[in-house]
Length: 318
Image (cartoon, rainbow, N blue to C red; front, side, top):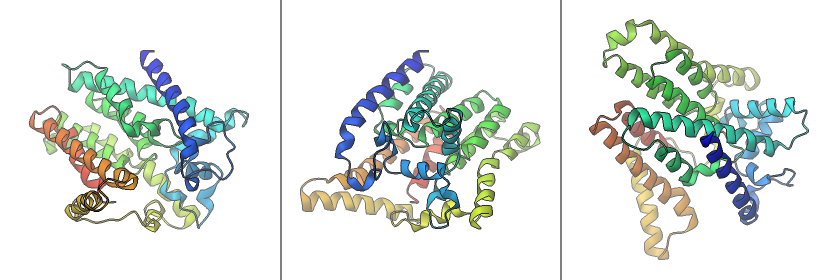
C-alpha cells in the first residue's frame, strides 16, 4: 500500500506538471489533433504505440516493428474490456501507476537482498527522482519493462526459476534490451551454482531458460508472417539516421566528448540538443560504470555489475 501511494502521488504530480509544460513541446512531437484527456502522454514514441493499436504492424511502410508488442497489446485489451468508453490515456495512467507500484516494491525487495544495510526506501526514491522516470508516466513501454524486469531479477535472486522464466518471456516481448535481462538472470543462475558450468547445466532448472526467447521469437515469427521479415524489429531501426551500429564504442565516446567540448568552446554554453543527446547520456554511462565497478569489487553482485558494463556498451552501439 505505501508503494502504491507513492506511485499514485508521483503520477498525479507528473501528470499535472507535464500537462502544463507540454504546451511548449515542439509542434513536430505532438499529435496532429489533440483528442485525448492527457494528450502529452502520446507525444514522440507514444504515437507509434497508438498506431500499433490501430494495426500499423500491417503497414509495410511503417517503422512500427521497432516497437515491441506487449505494451500496446495490454492497452488494446484494457480498451476492449472497457468498450472504448474510457479515455485511452486515462487507462494508460491507471495501468502505468500499477506497474510503477510493482517496480517500486520490487526495487525495495532487491535492495533488501543486495544492500541490507541501506533503507529499502532508498532505491525506490532514487528511481522516481531520476529524470528518465518521466517515461513511467507516458504512453510508453518503460513502465511495463521495468516492472517485469525488476520482478524477473528478484525471482532470480530468490532462486524461483519458473517464475523468473515466465516473466522473462514477457520481458523479451516488451523491448529488445530484454535480452540483456535474460543475460543478467543467467549470470545469477550461474552464481547460484558457484559459477560452475557443469553444475549449472546439469541441473534441470537450466531448462527454464529455454522458454525465455519465446517472447521475441514469437514476435519475430509474427513479423515474418505479416511483413515477410523475421528481423523487421531491427531493420526498421536502421532507417533512422540517429541510430548507428558501431563496434568501436571508444570512437563513439570520443565523438560525444568532442561534441560537448565543441559546444562549450564555440558557443560558450551547452545547447539543449547537446545536453539531451550527449551530456546527460554520457554522464549516465559514467555513473553506471562506476556503480558496476563498485558492485563487482565489493562483490555485492557480480552479475549486476557485469550487466551494468554490458548495458553501457550496448547503449553506445546506437
